Image (cartoon, rainbow, N blue to C red; front, top):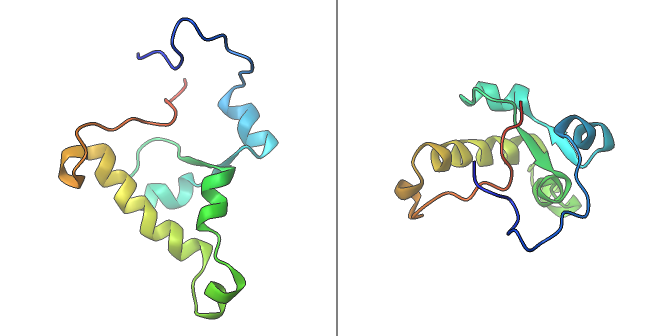
Length: 99
């Protein structure tokens, strides 16, 4: 497994996925992600959730958090399955699955 930090950097803070979900740092979207074909639990960071949350003007035009998430999940799944197809040389995950 790749190292998350170069050896010369000290880890200042660490928490488990369960802690991050409990504290609201991560938001659980596994139920919807499973409908899109994900086989592992999926969570979004609070900033990613914020980016998907429509503004009042967007909501007035019919956009919703659910529909935006439904748009993002297939792209994420495609990127994980085949990064080259989307023009990436490799996929650098923001976090790694924990067991």
